[in-house]
Length: 600
Image (tube, rainbow, N blue to C red; front, side, top):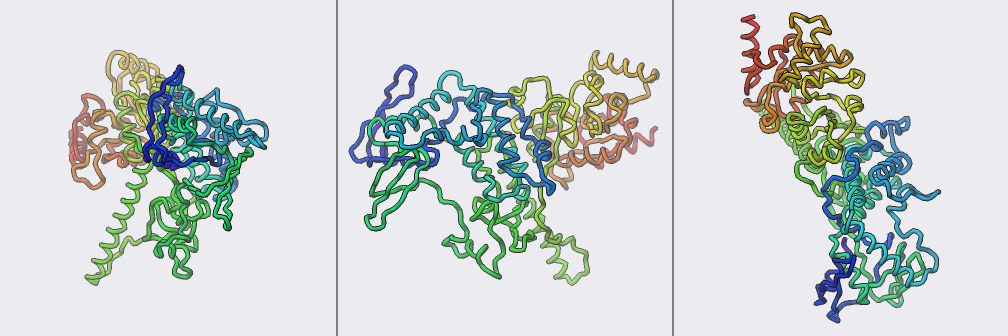
């Protein structure tokens, strides 16, 4: 994109003018009237072509909508005995398989080629001593085809490619911390992968490529092709550029239209430079995975020369080893950049709070036990967020999904709607089949109607912590409940509906909760921990570990869990019972529970 900016400055910026010149099949075609002040531009690069054009209606659903190859389970299966992955050997084949699933007409790699060479090196076939016209025609045809496939007619394949790379980019940011990879920078992650992603998904708007073609036709721009190398003659002051397909040109000016790579060791800022080159006073070290940057751990703590995290020193930004998260944040997706900044802010505030408590205690000469800062530990290999599964993205399921995503919870959703529709409805969530929902999540919320829940396949929820957010509404639910009671011999109706569900899913750990709050309230009523007006949510369970897991989820999304007993006692949460009420705090809900017990 730096070249596109330079092109505009040296042409339009010097008085040249583009005018519409549409042709059949080329509605965006332009012509260029030179000002006479333009230089002649010979352009080339490693790939020999510009970044791909933006895709028309890029947000419209395309492709399957979910990932089945690049998943946490697939990545874990490829780890070595030390729990490490080789990006090119272990991850790239999964990426290639995912792309071909989303884009069935995508080219296949030739024997002996890397799986994504067709995408990363579109002119790899152009080599030897090709005539200059052959190089020119190859580049022009590539740009023209790119514009047709991304802006004219059926663009579903290009849109699917755009969307799957965007989805993969986000997943890999979450799943591949530097400490999980072996091979350092040579492994290709994050730099090579980020370059490929940007090439396909972060290109210029179409009119800029139409301008480039117009400049070529006007004789202002000439193409060197791929694999360009430039040498300088110190005696003459001239530069010679050689393209990989045999093109060669000598000029008296060179513009390297690339953003410079970060390099702390070569920085002109002494503070930045001394972070890694200060000898015995250096507080950090250069990252092996991203040479030139300051190594930080997943919490942005600076890694010292001894490999241990500095407990009270943080660093953030492009000159650190944090994985690139520069893709634009889309609304309501709980984008990675926001989650990271929020997590860092929390760490800083907690550290300041601990420091303030310690300082006050020392000033008063008191002997107190301070929580202190935990001893510095080696950088953890991997960090994973809480994973929530939602079965049935209706009103309550969708509200729960959005609330969880905003709080940094990883969410997988299973429903009857096609994956593209779910992706459009709940951006940021992962879309999976009901049969794998429980195995890929820590907690599964069942938010389908009760009669549907009572017909679920038990094997799919074996060992799962299951939230029962259902209520018996309507004739279908009443009939299903009656049938379940007959099957269990509960003819006098003693069992709660959650006990009926637990009997249907005998290998699951059922927890009754979230059935006594409106779906709008799930999104709107969450508050930070410690807020005296934080809304309480009742929890009933027979399994304490399951209740604790669900309690952690409720706290994460902004509510105060209050355990009210077993699933049998969960009858009080059903419609018309004593705890099926409106908004209440922890104290109010606990008091209401005590009153019900006293009356009973």
